[in-house]
Length: 161
Image 1 (cartoon, one colour):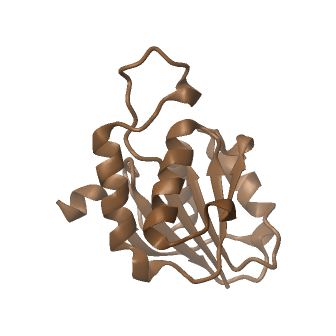
Image 2: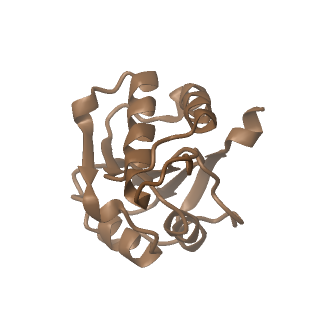
């Protein structure tokens, strides 16, 4: 069995004239990330492969989750190719994961995340919002053969306010 947790980066700021990849989290995003992270503590398997996009807003979100869930910061693997909005690219990356990992947590971006969860999960989600958490379980031993997963849990900041 394979378990995948997809977390969309928290709300970012558009205040500074930066390139997209360098945008930081907004105050609301920081609060929402902490809120979701503390709420899902019991939904996270103990041994995980943790991947994050190298975009500043995604890496900051991953760090907030790590702080709240007591993950060592060096357990987060920052991957430039996860800075993608294309669900086909995201699928290819996930399917390339080593089969020795049962649980993968991935911090990334929309539209890729929403399209991925709608293709592989069994619950339609119109839009995975910022700081959104989606957990999908696959009845397979190989990441390369994931399909028709079961959406076990969704948690969005609006569910907690």
